[in-house]
Length: 132
Image (cartoon, rainbow, N blue to C red; front, side, top):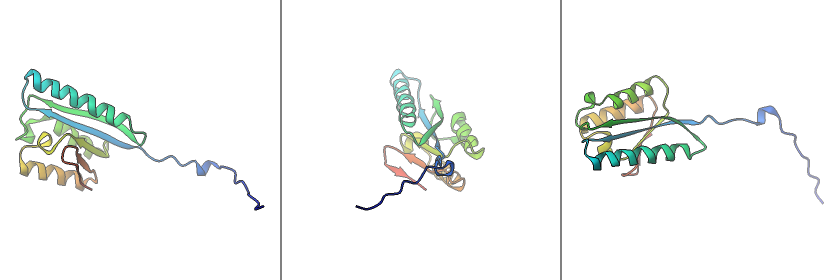
């Protein structure tokens, strides 16, 4: 029979992995009841999705209500999200789809590049696109 030696656990072996601070961005373009229900559904979904992961820490839910996605400068919550990313408060961003993030291709690319420059990936859930 082989001899088995038990190695005692040390304080240094109890390394805690840093949780990823995840934020979600949601947007609806009108204040109609259907759109507001969609916004509530998005907020609930992402709140539950982020908090269900042991390796994630909820970093915030940012949402613009009744605002078009064509102009980033008109969306205060999107701008606040970007500012929080710059401030080091967010490690990863998730959103429902590219169209919820931005309807303007140039703005979308600019924002994605800005996040990438900060080493913050973004996940577009509907399209299954995650950049790194």
